[in-house]
Amino acid sequence: MRLFWLIGSLVLALAIGVLTLQVPRPVSADAPAAVFSTERAMVDVREIAQRPHPVGSPDHARVQAYLLQRMAALGLQTSTQTGPLSPGSIRRLTEEGGDPAAGNFSATNLIGILPGRNPALPAVALMAHYDTVPHSPGAADDTAGVSAVLETVRAIRARGPAERTLVVLLTDGEELDLDGARVFWGGHPLRDRIGAVVNLEARGGGGRAMMFETGRGNAQTVALFGKAGVRATGGVTSNSLAVFVYETMPNGTDFTIPKARGVQGVNFAFIGRPEQYHAPVSTPETLDQGSVQHIGSQALESADALLRAPALPAATANAVYADVFGQFVIHYPPVMGWVLWIAAVALLAGAAVLARRRAGLTFADLGRGMVDGLWFLTSGLVVTHVVRQLGGPLSGRIDSADAYYTLLARLPWLEAGAALAVLALMLAVLGGRARPDRRVSAGALAVLTVLTIVLGGLNPVIAGAGVVAVGLSLARGLAAKTVWGGWTGLIALALVFAAGAQAAAPETAFLFLWPALLAGLAAVAAALLDPGLTRPKSLVAIAVATVLGGAWLIGLSHPVFLGIGMDLPGVLALLGLLGLMLIRPFSPERAVARPLLMAALAVLVIGAGLSSYARVAEPMVIAATR
Image (cartoon, rainbow, N blue to C red; front, side):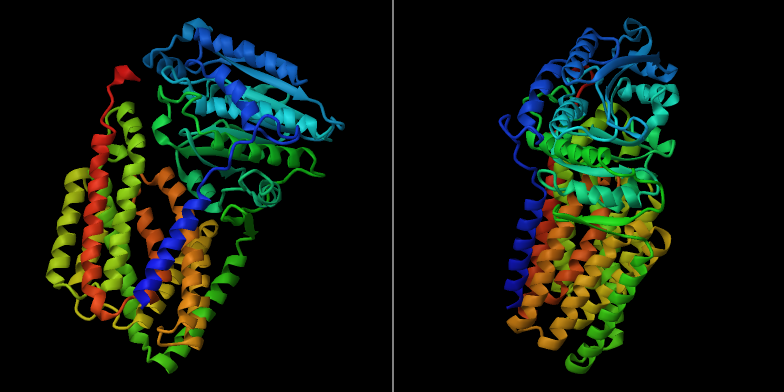
C-alpha cells in the first residue's frame, strides 16, 4: 500500500515542481501602460540583436545610435561617457576576432536621466550592457536586459512622477572585463548620487529569471524586494543560498563594481537554454519571451519600489530568505535560524518518543537511520560525479572556451542523468540497501570511485566519499531495521547539517531547516494518528509533506544545477538526501523490495545513458564556427 502512496506523492511533487519552474506568459502590446510588456520590449530586441555588436564593430555604432534615440524618445536626458579599454580587454577582443582599434580602444557608456521630484534624494540606477561577444547577436546576453530596461522606463513614466531620480546606465565592454562599469563607477559625477542599483543579465536564452545577487548586508534590500517582487508577472525566484554561493564564485557582472563600493541593489539573470550562451543561435527568434517578461517585470517592480521608497535600503546584516513556489518570500534575521533549529529538534524528539512508545523505535535504530543517510550522501557524491563525467570533462580539464560552451549546451542531459542517479540511490535505500550482497555494493562503489579518478583526476572529496561509502557498504548491521528508524535517523542527520550550516553560513541553513521542520511535523502527526504507518490518516500527513517539500526541492534543484552542477553535480545528492528524508516512511513492504532494487539499477543505467548521450546530442564545436 505504501508503494502506491510513494508513487502518487512523487508524481504530484514532480508536477508541482515543474509547474513552478515555468516562465510566465508574455504580455501583449495592448496591456495597460503601467505594465511591463514583452511584446513591446521585443521590438527593441529585434532591432538591436540583428547581428553581433562587439566593441569597435560597425553594428556596435549602429546599436549605440539606436539606443540613444530610444532613450531620448522615452524622455531621458541622454549623454555618453567614454573610457579606455583595459590591456586585457584589448587582447581578448583581438583574440576573439574583434577590432579594438576601430573603436579607438575605448568603451562608451550610454547614460539617461529621468529627474525625480526631489533631486536631493539618492538616485536609483537601472543597468544592463549593450555590447556582445564577436560571434553572437546576443539576443539574451544582454539585449534582453537592455530592452527590458527601456520598457521598464516607459512603464515607470506611465505610473507617474517619482520622488527619486532614475539613472539609466547602458554599459559597454562588459563582455571583455566589465570595462564600461569600471569607467562609470570609477569617476562619473553621477556615481556618488546613486544609492541603489537594479542590474539585468543573462547566461542562456530562457528560464525563470532569478534575483541571484544583492549588495552586502542585504536585510533591508531583501525586505523591499520581497514586497515588490511578488507583484511581478510570474512572481519571484530568489534565495539567500544563491546569494551566498555567488559571493564565493570568481564570476562577475557589471553589478560587481558598485557592490564593491558598498552600493545596495539587486541583480537578475536567467540561465535556462544554456546552449544559447555566447552562441550564434542567440537570436530574437530563439529567445524565450517568457523569460523577458519575467526579468523585465521583476526589474520594473523592484526599480519602481526603490524610486518611491521613503528611504533606500542600507547595509545592515545579511538576511536568510527564500521564495516559496515563486508566490511569496520568507525572510528573517540569521539568529532566527537557531529558533527554527530548536523547534525542529523538539519535533524530532516528540516523534521519536511517541514512536518508541507506540511502534518500538530504538535509539540504536535511529542511529542506523543516520548511517543510511550518510551512505546515501557519500554514494551520491561518487555516482553523480561519474554520471556527470560520462557527458564530458569537468571545467578544470577543458582546453578551450569552445569546450566550455559545449558543456553548457550539454547541461540539460547532464542534469537528467545526475537526477536519475540520485533517484536510483533513493530507491536503493527504500528497497533496503543492505539486502544485496555487501561485497557487490562495496565493489561497485569502489569501481565507480576509481572511475572518477580515471575520467577526471583525483578529487580528494570524491575519493574520500568513495572510501566512506565502501566502508559503510561492507559494515554489518548498520542499515536501519525499521521504517521509523530510517525516517527519524534522516531527520536527525539533516538537523546535524543544519546546525553546521547555521554556525558557519546561516544564509544557507534554511535549505536543511525547512524540510526538516516539515518532516518533523509529519512524523509527529503520523506517530499520533497511526504509528504503524499503514492507514490513510497517517499516510496523508506524510504525503502532504512529501508533495510540498518535494516540489519545493525540485524547484530549487533545477537552477542550482544549472548554476553549479557542471562542476559540482553532487549538489543534487545533498538535495536528494532531503527528499529521501521526506519519502522514507513510504518504504514499501518487504515483498516489493527486490523489484524496487532492480528498478533502482535500471534508473541508474538510464541516467548514465542520458549523460553519455550528451556527447552525441551536443558534439564538440569547432572554434571557427563560433
